[in-house]
Length: 170
Image (cartoon, rainbow, N blue to C red; front, side, top):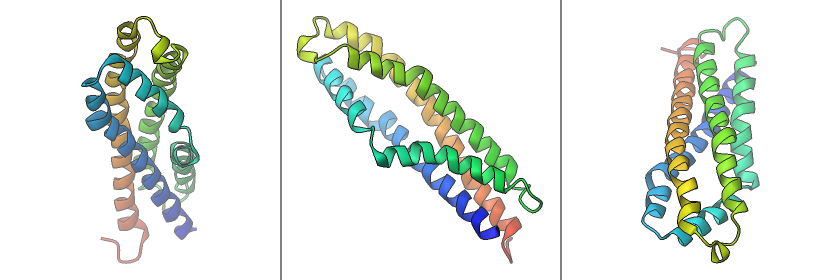
């Protein structure tokens, strides 16, 4: 059981860290880079990214982080795992905040951008960009902070796990 607890926590931390890194990349490079482009380029690129990101590797990490963190929390409910539990729960809450932001803000923005159609046929590219970019960037920063904080909590949970659950932990 001890080994399974540890593996679940490591897997939760890794998948959460990968998602945090993905959002961080958007925050510090993708969106600032697209901010320097014309309206057509931003719209077209984001439409293509929104299609490309829906793949198995993303799904494994995005959904897996939630499932693995819940599993890890459940495995640490028993005696001997409770010292780690507050950090796992904090990580879980922060990850759920990120999920909520994604579902309530980003998915509708991405759907509206896709519904705008082919950029070559959009009559007012600037208006489409204006309705999308600022809100998407602002909320991406917030979900980046939430997911990085979730990763930090799970990383600290690993430290506590090592100190309290492993032989010779210190």
